[in-house]
Length: 98
Image 1 (tube, rainbow, N blue to C red):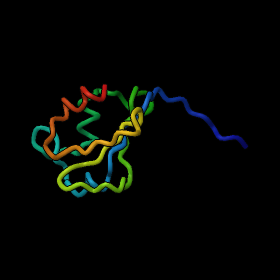
Image 2: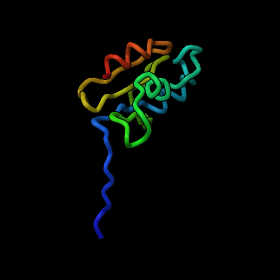
Image 3: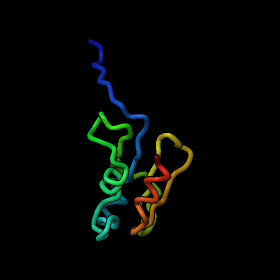
């Protein structure tokens, strides 16, 4: 039995470390209470699920573990990992990811 293929519109994915996000307990958005993944989804206005042009996925620990920041990887540039400090300007970050 062959695997079933499902089409997605993604051109890449943003991987956000779930452990960093959990340790930070938010840290982004206007009030500083939103997770980085959620703030990026809103700032990038991607759309829903597999129909979006870019996916934002919260992963397990990426092994960097910075203090007061979250590790993030853009799969379109896998050689460059980002350490996003708490209260960073997510709008500016989103402009750089487009």
